[in-house]
Image (tube, rainbow, N blue to C red; front, side, top):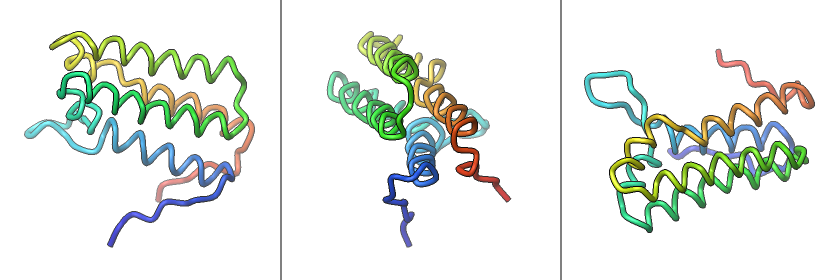
Amino acid sequence: MGIEMPTGSDPVSVRKRIEAMENLLERSFSVPGTKIPFGIDSIVGLVPVLGDIITTALGAYIVWEAKNLGMPKWKLWRMAGNVGFDAVLGAVPVVGDAADFLFRSNTRNLRIVKKHLDTHHPESRIIDG
């Protein structure tokens, strides 16, 4: 049984895809014995160069989805800046790997998208039961 992802371009479908991507990248695991979350961004980022390219591309996907929502350019630039800053930090050996735990660009970008959707598309809010 796999996870079924919505394929539509409506705000609810886009929100679900962005939330799923952020969860995968930033919070899909936890440090054993703690509640400190981490995701594949931290794991893949350990691979020099290629890992940073992959995680930057996955972060850029969230920005692309936000663009498809028709979000204002200034918000998209802010989101791209978060991804870019994360990519620059990730390029620094050891420091970049530690920064993945502290500067979660995908979580920051999800917050920007949620705030936009809650204001402009309140019907897209998903209430967890």
